[in-house]
Length: 109
Ligand SMILES: [Zn+2]
Image 1 (cartoon, rainbow, N blue to C red):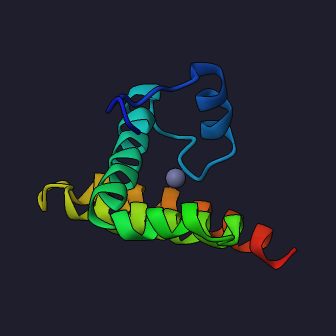
Image 2: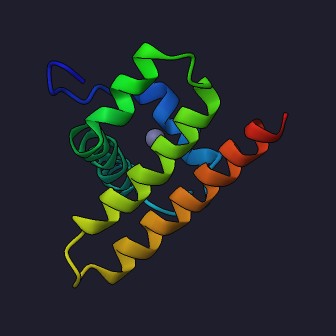
């Protein structure tokens, strides 16, 4: 976060795509959806700095913190998608729905 760089592991990205509801997309299209999600994380970090510092100071439950972070990444990522890109926006929602479902399952454990 501090050096403003998004890094991806291409091998794990391919695996992620296979396990996602967006298997039908090309690698480039899938990658772009992921970038918007990561930009959402970045915006969450910028807009909610107090949330991030509270986490450092207290014993804030890690899973809860991540869960809220994933929800915020969805929300903020969605805000920066141009309105005319309706198909892209739908794919973005699909990916984030399955991401939240994943985190919800983990949260229950
Ligand atoms: Zn995320």
